[in-house]
Length: 113
Image (cartoon, rainbow, N blue to C red):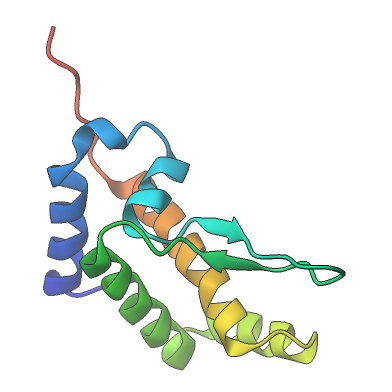
């Protein structure tokens, strides 16, 4: 992850520290929380359209770089493609996974005493 990408994610987190009470809240902030988009017999999800668009764009960039170069991610993509998943579905899951990893790395802001 480059300095521009990490800086944008930190700015998104720093602008909204009151919203970062959990990993799921961070995912909503970045616009990568899954939302049910099922109809009839089809069960599927889509990403939340809200949130910080710059942070969402940076998560997309991280996923694209991982899909091109990281062996674990490439194996995951190959496995999910063989299962019949589309590239959009795979990217959705990977963006959520990256948001989960980034949340663990964010500094915790202590409330004022």
